[in-house]
Every structure is written in C-alpha cells, then in structure tokens.
Image (cartoon, rainbow, N blue to C red; front, side, top):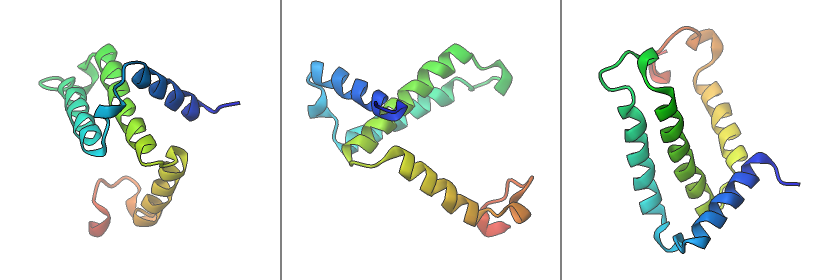
Length: 110
C-alpha cells in the first residue's frame, strides 16, 4: 500500500506522462517554476493584512508550490520524508529551544 507522499508522486508522474511533459521537467525549469509559483503565493498577501488573504487562492497557489517541490524531489530521487525530517533535526540543532523560543533572530544572532 502506498503512503500519501508516494500516492501524490504517482499521480504527478501519471499526469505529466499522459501529457508528455517530462521532457520539460529538468532541475532548472522545476526550480524556476517553483519560484514563480512561490511568488504567486506571495501575491495573495500583497497590500492586505495576513488574515485578509483569500484562503481559496492560497490553497491553489500552495498546491502549485508543493507540486513543483515534489516533482523536483522526484527528479533527483530524494526521499521527501527523509529530507524533511533531516532538515527539522538540523534546524533543531541550530535553534535550540532554550535560545530560540519566542525569538525571530537568525541562528547566528542567538
């Protein structure tokens, strides 16, 4: 039985293969697409209070960001769960609770 991440990756692969889009999904173009979609997500908040941003548009743009991120991980055979948990552990070392709790400072300023 596939887990949720594998299910998403399988659906993305199928979607792209049916359209012959794999040819366009090199690392560079996936990174550019990710950046473009992140900018569209950011646009949801332009000139608004954070709580006034349209949740339906945030949902749509966040899905686009995640689609590109998942495709990039898949392209480079990276295990999404593994790289995310590894990054959380590294951040925990950089931002120990006793120094970082309640602070927005960067790790080298703590």
